[in-house]
Image (cartoon, rainbow, N blue to C red; front, side, top):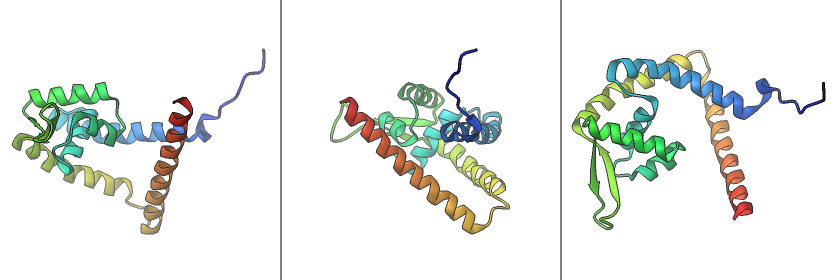
Length: 157
């Protein structure tokens, strides 16, 4: 059998982060899926707009690093269910902006405590200094990834 390149997935950061993210998101998603009939993408859209209303779907996609098509589908479902409102930007009538409706905020206000409780449970035994280190490292990884992405785009362009 010929030699092939080897990739130890258990030591490959993108794989480990993806698996962990999927497991954590899936765990909390079960709760709000059953109680509120929401998928992960829909909740992420609501979470962003709950904190930062009047964003376009493109801006939501950028903030969440989610696929624009997935965000667009989630927005359509949330508009249809009455959980989002769409209006047009005063400065640019071609640009629509989104915000949670009263029905959306009613759900948001119930899910936020659930999400924070889940996070408390998840991080329960982790000392405060380790939590602070974890978030500093995540911020640093985010910064490094953005640098790599910018370098890649510059090389391609």
